[in-house]
Figure 1: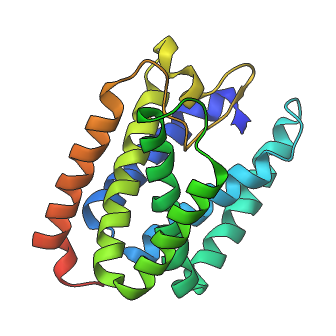
Figure 2: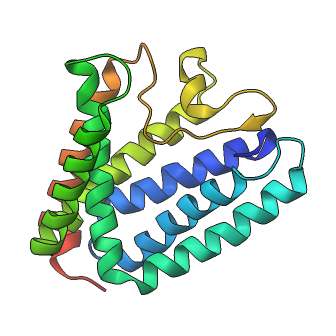
Length: 201
């Protein structure tokens, strides 16, 4: 979480990093790992601060973000597995509302995360391309919803005096989100396979 005034810049960062990941994730994979490591580290560290401690939230976000970025960049293969696991968990959260209500069962999330991690290690190039394309597509959508002031996007954008990001939660009443996510992810995958993913820098 961040002070509410920092919500729009954070949402813009999500959209920009999501676009980079979606369309050039394989070529710039280490950079993408650093970005997502920073975002995850910042989210985790800042959530340990009190909602009234503005300076504490900002410092924790910065320090946690740097630590997260360093961990994912230097733990390259672990980073690949984590990206695959994250994609598996995202698929579980996106697919479950079609068959049940509430959050998906923990066992389903764990199984899909494990399958994603294993697949990422065995099929690195293709897993990186698919994971970054669909992960980036989701970041674009979450960031876009956070930038919009629509009441239905409040769960994704935040609430109260602080900006809280729920990166895995599908906004209620937004039936177009899974369709847009799949379409954008497929486009990103195609762009990477055909253009940007041919050679990694």
